[in-house]
Length: 283
Image: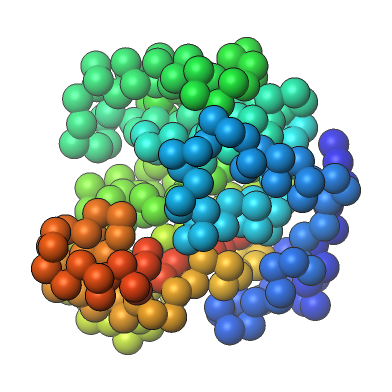
């Protein structure tokens, strides 16, 4: 396993209070991994990602995955990988030494058809390998229902990107997070990216229906489920986003829910302001 050094002033795992965004270290100095930056840059430069590349300026895949300490020889779970945007990067990056698993919703706890979820999980390795050119043997998938015992405690990293609002709306957050926690190794880390509401946003706005959540609430949710916050970053911040759109986050790109109404205004703002958090599984 490649070595990582989390050069945080407080020491990784020794933070006694939540690290707020403004207190985050420079992400470039937070995580070091020999050769990983170059390998990630190569994965992002894969010509097969041509259709995905337009969103790199909003999603910062190299910086984000470095911050979360993802190395090319790790076993990584990506939760709710339906769009496969990050899957294309991860599958290329992990193809030679590591393994990517698509972690699909537990059909017992989300309002989705179980058969369709099972079909999506079964198709995931082939779809991702076909799109990225990665070794299909380095990719797998499963739903979080009846997780095999052999999988528990074997994951180095799990990535939970822009999905917590839906999990909360469906009252599925606690159970799904608990299952992900069981999959992680004792020292495993879970990375979260989530559309960020203002700290004083009203409760009615942060119930999941608008896509935005308060950062303090996300930290509390993860702590309640057996995790501790070890770092946060402004890698995916967007100060142009006021995070108070009546129609929610979908007002902004890429959805642009209002279609041509004020389109240039929303395109100039760009994608949402996002928190980027890293949690460690507690004993």
